[in-house]
Amino acid sequence: MIKIMDTVKVKVGNITIGGDSPIVVQTMCNTHTSDVAASVEQCIRLADAGAQMIRLTVPSLAQVDSLKEIKGILRDRGIVTPLVADVHFSSEIAIAAAEVVEKVRINPGNFHKDHEKAKEQFARLVQVCKANGTAIRIGLNHGSLGERITNLYGNTPLAMKEAVMEWLEMCVENDFYNVVVSLKASNTIVMVEAYRLLAVAMQEKGIVFPLHLGVTEAGNGDGGRIKSAVGISALLSEGIGNTIRVSLTEDPVNEIPVAQYLADRYDGRLTSTMASITIEGKSAIATYISPSRERLLLDFSCDFGKRLLDKELDEVELRGSYIEEGEEKTLDGSEYASYLTDELMQAARRRFYRPEYIACPGCGRTMYNLEKTFNEVKRRTSHLKGMVIGVMGCIVNGPGEMADADWGYVGEGNGKVSIYKGKEPVLRHVPEEEAIDRLLELIEQS
Image 1 (tube, rainbow, N blue to C red):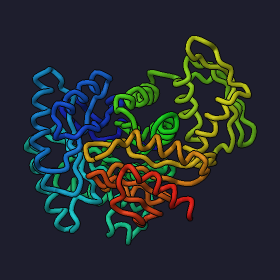
Image 2: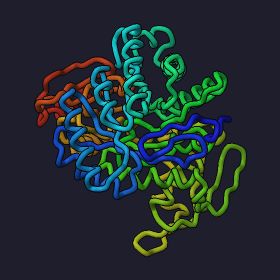
Image 3: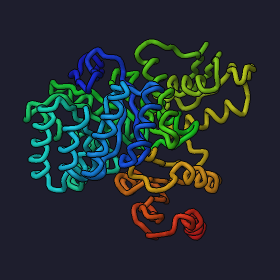
């Protein structure tokens, strides 16, 4: 399998991604980029927490000016953390942003509707990046594959790989290699398979670009952390991945410790607290002596997520102990051990014991209180075992990423919400204060 040292080295400001460089931890602001003061304040908190790269959404040309102001203030304050512009739908915005920040993320699925025009615009973007020393992330999401690709390959991991390979060929044609790639999905099986296919394809081509890993729309709380750890660790354990983001529907500062744990573990600075393991057939008994609840959760997810995803194991029994608030807690036969096992099985998509939630972390495109709404949706739908419910901040990736959902809640802006059944909107322009009630009514009527 591909090893990290086989990849191209990419420079993003003062950071190197790929080659023999350590895994880079990054995150994204959920402030509105036009709110310069709030964005600067959040960037400072993220940098202080250990973020090595910070992304901000740039939905219009006006935000390019805001981004320039944010960068100037941060640099004046001695914060040199590289900034990344997150751009959807407008190649012109990407080109403008490339003159301001150290890296620009573009989405192949919505860079430009016309493929030939997209190639022309990408060539323009590359020239600006070359002139300014700017890196590019080709950041494809499962939910935003272009129509041309899905007509050829379906909405599959293969389609994700093929779409990205087209764009990497364009990079080579333009003699541009300062490129990082991502193939994110909210489904851990789809995400892992897509990255594996791409890693092999790049190796066969003879040019391996660094990979940015993440499980998109992972949600929040324990579930979001476990889901992220399962998908990301499965790949890092195979030598696939050079930079990571843990996407949580929480304050983005909370993402950093989880991502740092993964970086430390797979860069060899940290080992699991698992004390012993017994395997009989496709069942395992794992005993941990863990210093904290959080460490146990992450170790357990990384030790067994890949084995469950790949169906090497079917069941895991958790034993041992962990420390919580200075007190040793036993795992043998405990409710917490059962809960962690259920969450891990759900994250690996082997067994569903509660609803499956697809929820984005929020960004500057989100026009409502996403975290509060998501927690309320979870509270009021917790009894719907096995149902897939999406709660999305906006329409950029929302409808696409939750295409597998039974029901979806998507912010429109201006205090309004669209409610989806499957892939189709069944109610539009619902006042935000009524939207959860309307969603539940529709579920009950179906």
